[in-house]
Image: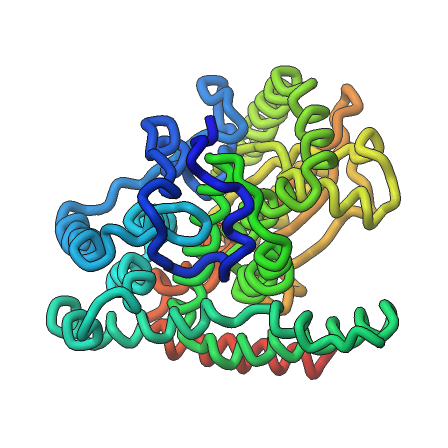
Length: 428
């Protein structure tokens, strides 16, 4: 239930997404329900057995006790120095900081990044803030806080403001596209430390979650930033779990009629689809086990925004999207990926035009996996993704996953990723 004291239009009167002190009357009352909704995972619910009957279930990772103590100190710092501050979205800054930290913890992002995510919004509301942050949390956290604030200020709003009123809609669109591309390249160069990107995306995602909880519609320029900058950044750096939720939530506000229609159509077959997925999961487990391939098999419904994009791309209606559910197969090595693919194609009919080998030909952002669409004996279609554990970790969390596999610093790997991206762009 939306709080009556929240003005759903007040955000558009000020710069949305930045901290600003407002009256106590404007602050939303935090209910038990909103706290629970704010803690939900960015990880989609993948069905693995008959005991798991939710396609979109919560999954909150509890931080280690030592990390909790440090983060508690950071949240306490925010309460002490900005406890009366509310973002223009209507969300209390303390709540926003806690939500952003939770998002990064689910991704297994460590301090100092999580500390900076908790602290950066409080920066302008604290006297002698640089000295205080450096003394209590270290110079590295301070530099991340400063960098995150600079990165968060990058917006497409300035592009729209620069458009002369005399220009035609076509020329405005052309100039906007060119300037957005230039802005993106600037962002990539500025974001050589991937931690700054993660902090920005966590903050944006938390704002969208808050708006969804209280049924507040963000202003159009904020939503445009989500699609043009934030989702693009998440995709560019391979952070797909954040990309998917950012897009789904933004689409929910951008086109609520279409969003509700697709959601309603998905829910109409919710129980039936869950059972279809579970049966397919069990079938794949059996055939792979018989071939002596150890595999983790799971399934889920696709995101609403990705379904809508496919409808637009193929110029078809919802009922012509036959692979609205996806199966995931995780195996030990690359050889088993191709062995599993052969077995799946031998078990079910496959659609040749829907096959993609991103293992031999990875996407420019580093994504690797085998994608195929199969049709079972009852005519049900599923997209099947096959990958190794390492590929899966990267598919879920992008560059952040490399911290588990490489000794390079986040800054060093960010530079490497920027160089690789530029090389790929030259080869296109």
